[in-house]
Image (cartoon, rainbow, N blue to C red; front, side, top):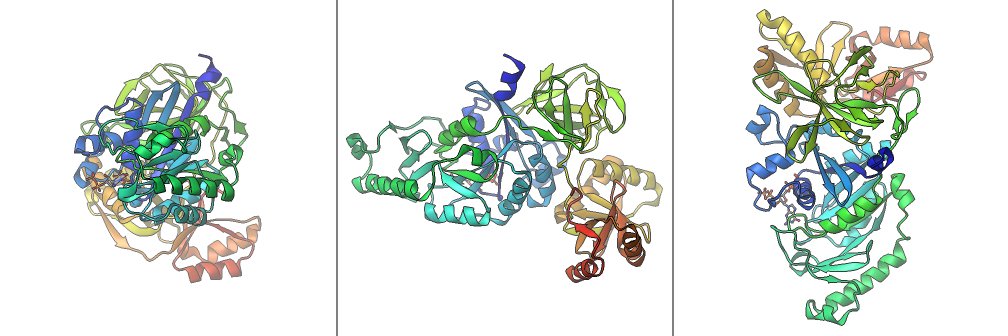
Amino acid sequence: MTFKDEIKRRRTFAIISHPDAGKTTLTEKLLLFGGAIHVAGAVKSNKIKKTATSDFMEIEKQRGISVATSVMGFDYEGYKVNILDTPGHQDFAEDTFRTLTAVDSVIVVVDVAKGVEAQTRKLMEVCRMRKTPVMVFVNKLDRPGRDPFDILDEIEEELQIKVRPLAWPMGSGTEFNGVYNIFEENLYLFTPNKQSLEEGIEFKDINDKALMEHIPENAAESLRDELELIQGVYPEFDKEAYLKGELAPVFFGSALNNFGVRELLHAFLKIAPSPRPSQAESRIVQPDEDKFSGFVFKIHANMDPNHRNRLAFVKICSGHFQRNTNYQHVRLGKQMKFSSPTAFMAEKKSIIDEAFPGDIVGIPDSGNFKIGDSLSEGEVLNFKGLPSFSPELFRYIENADPMKSKQLAKGIDQLMDEGVAQLFTNQFNGRKIIGTVGQLQFEVIEYRLLHEYGASCRYEPINLYKACWIRSTNKAQLEDFKKRKVQFMAKDKHGRDVFLADSSYMLQMAQESFKDIEFHFTSEF
Ligand code: G4P
């Protein structure tokens, strides 16, 4: 296979949803189709749940929450599919944001009864920012839910994206008979089956008389009417608009009962993009360039609790990655070669000799990598699109064991490199402030500092509203601002100026009084 063919057959994506909409179940079903796992997750034994969501951290075992993000790759009908798992818990949203920077497209799962929920809306904002192509899977059609037309309107409005159904449900709840595949123009009748991949009965023509032997005439009649309505209301599916992130094809089904998943997967493979170009600071990098480049979007710690080892997840942006070959670690300005890069085939990890754009490679790391680091064949490339977002919660972090201050400093430093949370240093009093998206992150930090670094920390409250990265071409005004607001000025981990506003009123006043200063809620602008 040529290098270009290898790139063309890759589909790297993430499934995102509000917790409980069915992301794990859908992931399992896709893995089943790919032959990557062999037991369906209907009786979701812990084992399956864990292999499908991956867990490397002790803390995760304790809490039963998928803290970690991992990769599941498999081959299917000539395609190489890479699913990047994202933590379901909203307190780890920042992990999910970063994972979204490494994917070429996204499948959003929406619960037919609950519609679009908060977490989905937030994640969709990141997709919009990056113009990521998005497909929607409306799940749990086997349960009583909302009218499909209402759900489509809600998706369009709440996710601010045009929609186009490419599958259509016949009835719902106990009346759910099947899914008409608009994309391939055929109908599969529903035989609830949680365990196997039996495909049901296929009809090419919805006017087929034999259909009546299986479903009531009025069900077939309503399907025909609804399909007519769809053709009248929605313009033809426009693949270009989808690839630009302007239009979301929508599918309906039941992940648990394995219905509508095949339709989704087949359409996905045909229309979802292969690896897209990546934006570096200096230029755009094309996947089919000869020279290898990639960036670290995730670092896993504690792969093995007995050794403090980490795994840096590298997304390959261009070129042909090879084992034991010298590559440039751009930030450190040094050559490194990797003897045991790992690939992920479902739950199995194995050492690989090569990888291609779109693939994710795990590199064992003893502390050389930070999130956002680039690797290349010599060129200074810094990939964009890995911004920090303003945290929601802030606390002072203090040393609770004076004998262990070195351990604490090292622990905080490494945990921040991994992207567990954000650290700000107040310029007025030198105190360290941890910013997180959720309460759980504080607990993770405290736990990990103690268990991995032998350090104890204590949190103290601080009342803050947002962290704003500031910038101005008016140097005098910027200096004046920093002087006047010295109590609220901090540096982030990279030494950038951050204004810590304690209320939206304070921020508004600052914006009005200092017109030449830009206030940003993300670190990249
Ligand atoms: P998540 O990863 O998005 O958080 O969702 P997950 O797949 O874990 O699914 C959440 C719950 O919804 C699970 O039930 C799952 O079995 C159920 N579910 C998923 N897809 C469907 C579907 O198509 N139809 C119906 N009726 N239910 C579905 P649970 O009871 O919370 O978990 P479990 O005890 O089954 O593991």
